[in-house]
Image (cartoon, rainbow, N blue to C red):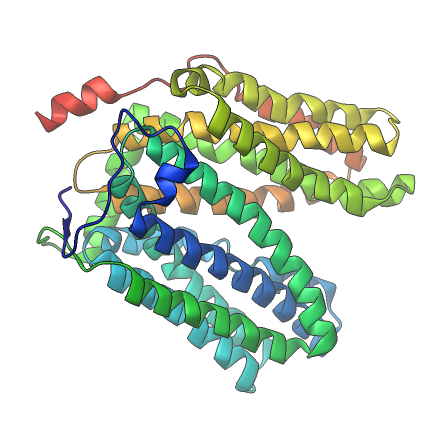
Length: 411
């Protein structure tokens, strides 16, 4: 897809970009990176504060858990019905409106007296459009960072996401304790508002080719076409399933630790730490071709250490195993360029929206399924089963570059 920039910016050369510094010099990426990092902190703060607010009002653990995860499943419907919008509106406008919508919803949650069901419906409604503006942002990153710069950009984004989630969790505890739940949600609204202004003022104006046809019909047809393509479908499943299985396993760490009297906090912190280390090592120190060859190995590294939960290993050993699991998440750096290169012209935004939606859906559903299994089996056994499921996805040859086919299509 051709994108017109109203003012010039520095694009790194495909052959020479090998450092994070070169990627950071691309002005649109800096804006998208900064706004998204701030939005993740705000998202985490809002999710935690709303869950605590719902629990305080209802004393229902089930409703509190629903408030925590209500934004996952609606994204599936939003991507299915509205995904084509990511390729129809200028990215600056669409992304800014998305953050502005998040801010408005947070203000309403904090200031407008509503029953719990109305709060949940509001959060779900905003979640429906989340994959649309995320898809537009990811498409734009792929446009402005060619070649291996794109992978390094995604590596930086992954690092920021992990750190932002940790900061959001810590900030939520501090804000709720110091200010209260509603005031903490207002702080989240302020974060989203700043992200919207940052995007609106920092990104250049972009134009898109004119598109026609009904939005919902185009969205449904576009998703069907993406899923019917064997290469794209394989790459989507590769990015959806291993993280989903591991997230299901993470959801059982707390009950597992409680059964054995282990420090759950150390276990929960291990995976994000491993993710940070893995992204730094694989993103910065491993050559692009080697990253792709390491995909099955890294996926196996996500699954195999979970088998240790079948044993009575001491908690330092479990922490070390979970750090390795987190490091395996860097497999995505070997898949992302292949996924980008396999996409058809003119549908990148919708494809990235579908990728984000499937990932969020898997990470929302598999913890629930893991919880149901844990009603019949010990948590450690379910964690190990999910490790085996992750290992099953580590088939060699799962990822093949599509550059030649993609170049032929462009020609």
